[in-house]
Length: 168
Image (cartoon, rainbow, N blue to C red; front, top):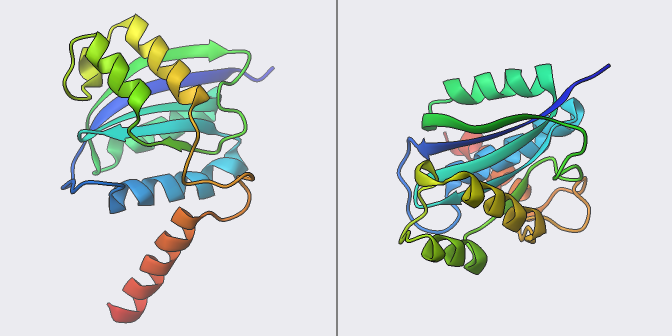
């Protein structure tokens, strides 16, 4: 019988962040949306104040292997697992990688707990649970109704990759 898990981890970026949806974050998101469906991995990514909050779901051996790759990825530093659970049902089953940008509900959660910036390294279990609930209910503005159709982020990344090959 297959064992399914959910890993929730946080990390700090190891690249310069300049407002909005960062180019490296878009690359991570696009790669996840390309690589995850064939491996039956689902999840969500939240990025703010130089920190990632990500949930990965799928078969245990596949998710563990992916997480090992993430830990070796030079774009991440200070990778920390918040939760590693066996699951019977996925929270983000229809999302190869859902992206939730900074939003009011997260800012309210932070303010209610005395935070002025997004610092998931100081989250307690209640905040982690609330964060997951917010992310599960939030809309993904980078994706259209069907995750199989290339979205605007994927098209932008492909365009940048193409230009990089042509221009050098």
